[in-house]
Image (cartoon, rainbow, N blue to C red; front, side):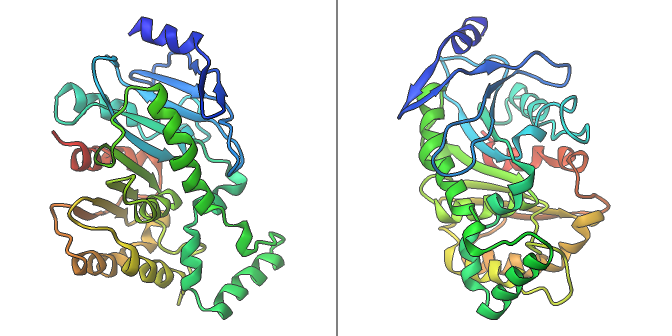
Length: 312
């Protein structure tokens, strides 16, 4: 393990014109395994940002690892460095399940968000096409009143996904010991990251076989009465849910803070997937009574989607 980490530290990886000097983050009492930081990952598609790659204890060239690409990467592993001193404990939970041999070996690729453009990066852009023009125009007009001046071109969700698939994944597969096929490649996140994970597997069903969509933000923007936006997501899903024969979807939601606005969509989402042939074998949409919209809540149940997607 030490030799592998030394190799990573001393090597400048080059792949498809990508030159990076990875650095192993200092050991933290909050991290099980190691986190390798790829600073300002070069991209022509979105605003460059850091990417963290978590490798488990025992990471070895003698093994091949499944990969989960996750959004909001700075919140996954180390509460010492997060803005709210909370984390998913993705490393702790993953190591516990690996050590118990309940799941396949895997790594996590955590893509950092950029707070001021997070919403625009993670919004499923093609779903805008399912909004009536009058409503879409009113959204953009409202943004101008708030000084945001958002237009349809501002939404970068398609570029963000293309970044993962065309720029980041080839780099990860070239420089880490990964299983490259869709059966071992997953995408996951919470809130807007839940929406983007749902969107990612629908847009790239040949790349991802499973999606983790925790506290999925079905309101899309601000929760409001008679909100037209959820229907645009559902109309998109109706036309784009991939085959149940080779894909798995995990959704969940709490009932407190921002999550209080999600239970009303439970049956609509269920019906969409059941109508496409999904069952409890490849689809979950779980309710967690009393849980809120925070990393402290998400860490309590992150083991469930890991077991669902990675169980041996």
